[in-house]
Image (cartoon, rainbow, N blue to C red; front, side, top):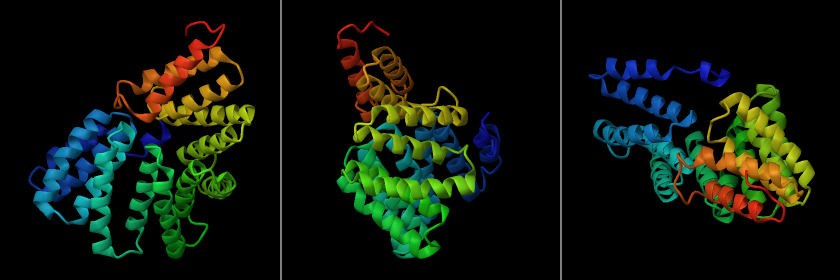
Length: 299
């Protein structure tokens, strides 16, 4: 069990809480949301999705269709859909949650900023950075006005914004935001934390875009090692970094390592995501190109 998992209730404890609160709908819903989040973080996307579908129906019945609890479930299901490739459904769920939260809390609220952050992240996942960048910029602006520029939430939003700036070709702006975020993450979390792994991955991606493939491979390797220590070696979230690392190796002419990393990414993703998921498609395409290169043996 990783340190991240040890700090959370176990799945068994949450299932017990759901059973214990079967006659207390509000408390039962809270435990169901927590269990779905735990399953999603551990890569069990199928069970998380089934539970969230049931939980949304129950939340609408118990609290009403425009309640903040419904918005919470919509957000959780939207996050899951980003990972599984159900992008249209996630977009609709996020927008529904955003409408509820703006109506409930106003436009300058942490929950609104979180949903803008997530809409930006979804656009990044589906390869539409220009669509997502305004949401990410809005999220950073709200957080700074609420908390100041050195807050942890601002750092998380800066990192997400940077990925979209990168996708828009604004590499220097992206690197500035990432390095500001990384300084806060390290100050607050130390060196062993998931947000640091993601930031290292994104800094490597910028080096990749610039054509600095050796530096990119080094950064992806550091990110992969940290993700593995935190999540284990079978978590599907490793796949995006494996694809980046494989591509950096391929650009350097190291086809053997490239093929191995692409193959591992395909194996991690194919049982868990839609067949047209961008990361899975990139892994398969990269593997095909690598194996077609002259002198490359099969993995």
